Image 1 (cartoon, rainbow, N blue to C red):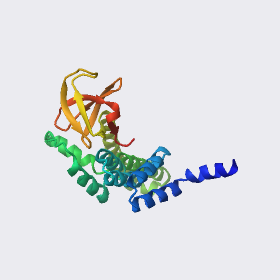
Image 2 (cartoon, rainbow, N blue to C red; image 1 turned 120 degrees about the vertical axis):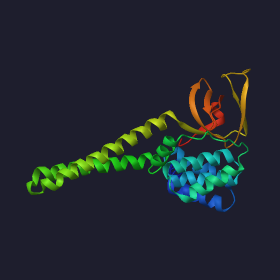
Image 3 (cartoon, rainbow, N blue to C red; image 1 turned 135 degrees about the vertical axis):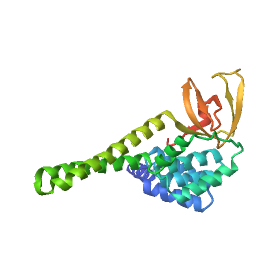
Image 4 (spheres, helix red, strand yellow; image 1 turned 60 degrees about the vertical axis):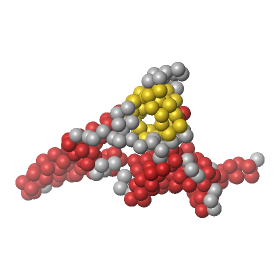
Length: 243
């Protein structure tokens, strides 16, 4: 029993699991590597590196939908990682569906450019740092009278920057909550006008098609494509980005 417990503990060790996944990948056992990287995610080790390696394993094993889902999840954590973006773009070339997105307005483009500067986690750290700087300046203003003339403009400026960053972060969080990204992982699926068998087919989707979740009902999910088309598909046919 002791030997069995020790073996189970070693098998669950994340460092050992990561090493074995890397060895499997280097040895061409891509499906096995994907299973082990996925085990790391189930254990709570959802870093961008794990998602990236999982995407590579899925891509090499031919699971394009799961590869794009993994790359998208990695990009959520490390939005400026060039390797992640490069592999994501390569995987998108293999996707069967070609969707022409609706052109956003000028204000929307400005917002997207502003929001893409930092991820939500990075924005949270920035807001926290700015908040600490505000109170450091306030403490200096209270305890260092000679520097009050210098510190008061610093308090106003830092406070204004903190407020703007907090508003942008709040807007991004609300937008991400209302626009949950997902990727179709089934080889093919039919998007229906209504949830349930017998409904009219709105469009066909294939592995790797990216969409946004707009609602759920029973075992169906309402998704919206980049061109604005919506339809209900079975929930087991897609995976939510970042989960």
